[in-house]
Length: 580
Image (tube, rainbow, N blue to C red):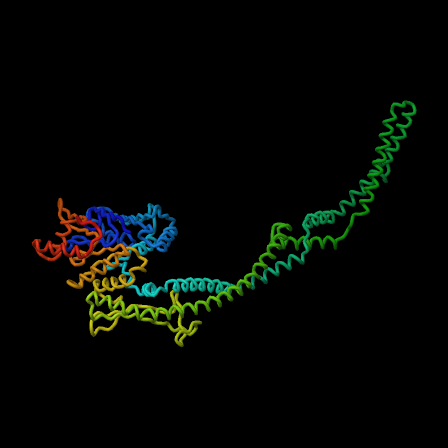
């Protein structure tokens, strides 16, 4: 329910604050008073595009704010959930079942939209607005003009929404799976090339038979072979010095031991010195023996050195390709194994997707044919009721048809009435309402109707038929009385009254027969103050409302007879609210 509407500096309105009520809200006033401007402002706050031309002269910006109550009292549970989900997509919560939408339009171009204080883009705002309010008249909210919406009307009438939604869900799932399959197929060549490359890399690393510490060991071994001659020379020289040459260390130590032995015979206190020098002799002899053995082990092997160089070159080549060291190369080898396993799973995934797609196609074929058949069966009843409703609205020569078209598609897996037809998200059929209001006129798409009044009456008829199933809770009718009067207006008022039992309805009218059915009645007036035009709005009660209905009968002077007639119309209209 629209609870409040605040308008500031919009068109000729300086500032208005309006508190609306449930049921049928009537807006009346003199021609040019600003009634439609209020509806335009509502459209703006619901996401219609704006320009700085809508800003009141002399002002820098305009602002419109609307307060909606989305509690279960006014909205069905399913609708409330959808609204909340739409808000959540924009990161917004509806606290205490209230939505406050604010729209600012600036001459500087810095326009802003807010929902519950959160900035929202225009597309998101329009999505929310389309779920809250349906405006019928000379506005972009005329959902009936778009044939894409006609299937929703027919499905609502025929209770096939659940079938349509299931069809849509399966369709979207099918498209998603087909995209995944196409992506896998398109990447098949790339995948095979990747497998070949990974297998080559794996084989190359495996053939190398790398060991973790191998490179360090080979470098040490290479260093020994490269310095073999020097090592041999140094070993010989060292052995000669220690043992084999004249005046070697061993020979000199033996001479020293002889001298110390003689000393010890004379002075026994030198016994430890003699013992130590003999120990040194033993150690030198051992060192000399070990040097001799080391010398014998030194290899002069150019072939082995060449093998080491080749092996180190192979390791360096692998390092350039697969990692900074052998450990990294072996780690990469494990990663190759994992990737190859994952790639093989993609083939399994492709097979699984193919099977799921076939199952979905079978289910979609069944669903879409069932939906098309149900819609065709529903259409005849819907056409009949629409023509009856429109005739009651004094469109006596009206013809209304639900036109079904099917797009031939030889590649389709769905065959209907002997022909292969294309599948769309909402079924295999394209539905469009066709209409003719006069004898001799061909049926034409509803979108070709020029008259706003005719369109509003068609919408009123639809809303009257769908009064208990229509999901949009707030309806606005502008120009619903265009080109009608008298008895027709009375019927329009009655139908608006009926629709308002399940919706909050706003109606702009010039006809007293319609206005008298309102549950609440607002009068819009325009006057000049301090050289500026000022628009005001007020709720009419009691005598004020009687006077307005009397004025709308067309008399320049409101007579007592006109007042009595107005009272009778109000009484007959059956207002829900106290008018005293």
